[in-house]
Length: 412
Length: 87
Image (cartoon, rainbow over all chains, first blue to last red; front, side, top):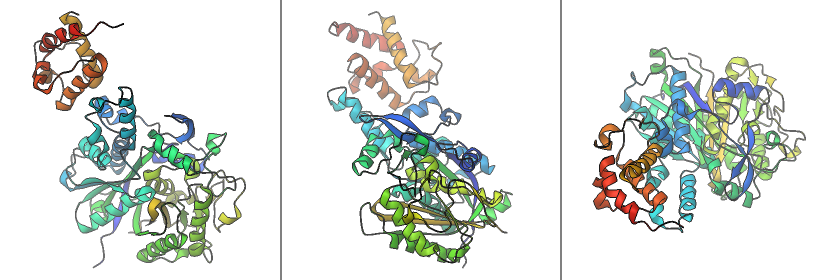
């Protein structure tokens, strides 16, 4: 039996350079990055991507006080996605709505805050917040979203390091096909800039970007790249089975064409290009596509010296020859690494290409690293494409988790 | 400290933990829960803020004493007045 066709019918996002898909896309086509300097506890001024949406649009002040930043970002994205999809919560069967949110990590922000808080009270734990546990449970962002929306179906997070954004969509696709839910809100979020630990960790790995000009700090594939710019963000989609979407006359952004998830099983942090290439090939096989049938490849590259080379090796192995219509780009050059949101946000930034046939570039490449010189790279300026019918989105993460998601232009 | 001073301190705390609430007409003799959207976690916030801001401990057995502003004042004012003088 053929699996149900699953379609994307709504997008809600907040990125360091845009609080809606239209604004985000406009900035991706006009070269507007969203990196700034923030003060990080114990570390001082650091480069980061910060979201500037208005959280009070969908939450009360008390919800913001009690909840987490990841929860708040999730709620904003979920509400925006529902509005974009033209769906009212009053008409949805609330017990048939699934919420699947990818996270790189969760709980570090609140734990650091509480340790800092009790440090002001001589480490007396009676000053530890009674909100600590509901704030730090791994399902927090999804749970806060279900509380805000009043949906009673399954709501949980998917921990998948920086592959998590893709994983939210993949998991939702699976759940819709299994008939577990009838409507899904899915994608990924990150609150990572609010924990000093992630900055300190990457710095200790020699993988934290530095640059005098914030907007030029995130520079995948450039010879002078020197690490990751840490960012917050979120992107949630509404996913539906095609028959349900058509029955309500929904606008359809794209159809899920294929996906794959695998593991390197080789290193804690160093990516494995063989496994990445296997992941991409398996996703292509599920989609019934040859490499030449992919028109945009959105890379995961985070601008670490070695990681970019590893991914380029994988891309070259799959798309290196005989793919004249395949364009390759990278979104982190604009927004830094939004961690758990990365896969979902980066896909969103490319979805409008189905309509405008324009491929957003990878910016900040002044001097292309020859080891990253893969055919089809779109450097610094947008490129018009002869056709854009398919987008392949890579998201990889620590402990060797790889995810590839392919979407295609919807054709009835 | 007078009982009115004490009520003011409690209201200051409530203003922070329930920032969406209008506190201009809170009735002293009516249970806080019956006139404001406060749940059990919010009352734990009141207990925590009394501890953090003022060094006042409210044992769990006495939580009911925080039901209204009047009962707060009855219960807390002696505790405030028993605090060692600052400085």
